[in-house]
Image 1 (cartoon, rainbow, N blue to C red):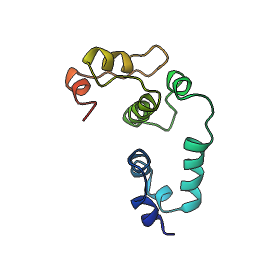
Image 2: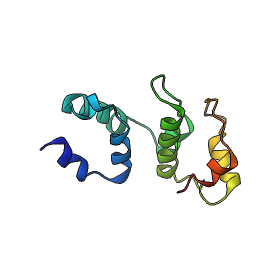
Image 3: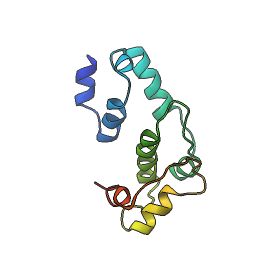
Image 4: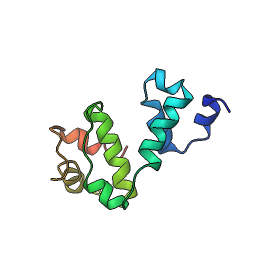
Amino acid sequence: MKICQFRSQMPTAIRDWFTQLPKSTRHDWKQMSRRFRKLYIGTTGSYSERYFTMKMTDHETPLQFFYRLNAAAVKAEVKFKSSSKLRESHIRSPAISVPITFTKSDLRNVDR
């Protein structure tokens, strides 16, 4: 199966992950499968535990971390989309040690 066929059959969350990979990784099945297994298969613990202990990695931009954080929040059933206060607490969680600043318009656009 070619990688482009694999991409068309992916769920949305995995497709989003796939599109943020460097082109060199996207075109190399071995590298891509290694990253996929590390992120989606090699993790242990409950979804909530993973969400509350997330840390930004060295190779990750704040935006990439934010996307990963949102995906983890959805899996952990954290209700952050229903109000701006919940969105802000989601972003400013004490477990998350990332110096990210967001404007109010950024917070309004989280669920879009």
